[in-house]
Length: 163
Ligand SMILES: [Zn+2]
Image (tube, rainbow, N blue to C red; front, side):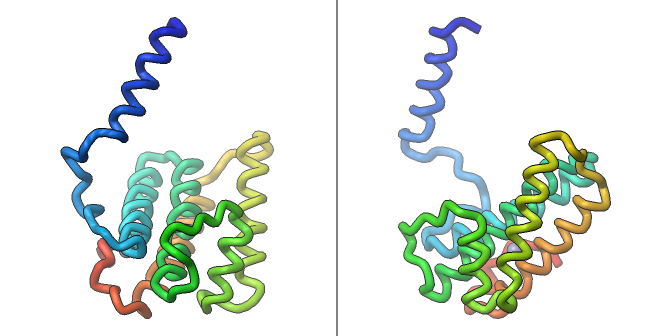
């Protein structure tokens, strides 16, 4: 692919985000910042399950981690512990903030951050290739960490997950 072709497709991708929305993904057309995070988490869990079925364990695990993060962001927004325009770019900080709003006890954030770092290191440096068991365990963890804060919220009926 020539440089000019790459620029053209980049421009096209940029424009697609600038245009007025046409066909919006069903289920995600909500306005509240907290509901956007909640529904993204629901979708990531569903996607993770599909990926697991296809044998795509590595990206299945990534979906599980991102689902956990979206769920934490949902709960932080829901509890007013985070502003809609606030961005928490550190995984560790996000997990710790989740622990602070009662998603689990004090060591939860650190343990989750450790798990994330371990997974990252292994998949990036090819020290290990993701297994079915790991993907299943991570999706189970992400599902439990989704249900608990969602069930305890005022908007549990907004969850798209089929339990
Ligand atoms: Zn859900």
